[in-house]
Image (cartoon, rainbow, N blue to C red; front, side, top):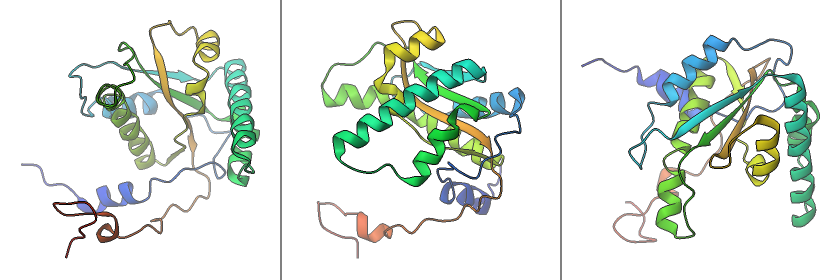
Length: 206
């Protein structure tokens, strides 16, 4: 059995932060590196037992601009609807999103589920683990990314930009670039004992 360097694994898991500002917008991300990360992402578990994930990598300047425009529109609409100001880090990302070296859309070709919770869980649970594995693989290679879902509310518009067929659903878009002076560390989160119950709801672990 191959031993696992738990320290390295734990570091990647504990420091996979959203990187929106300290990115190198001028340094291309090699295609081979992206494919290597996707190869790892497709090792993720899938609840449907099928490999329905697809990864669409966007590096074309005009297409990135079109997607960035859509992203900004959705963010503005969301902020207005919720009556909240857009965070400075989010605004910084939007302003330079079109300059990001690569955008990776994680899609699924599975038939869309109904409204029932079990179907929804099985459907998205069969693609999102791959998206998260992809973000971790990128992190381990010095690449920053941000988990974004705003473009999922513009299925037809995004499909029009990228030629995505009707039966395909885009779920997560990861803007990807090498980090530049970013210090990624553990976040201040509640301890496991504060968010974990044992055998019954609200029964905390001793």
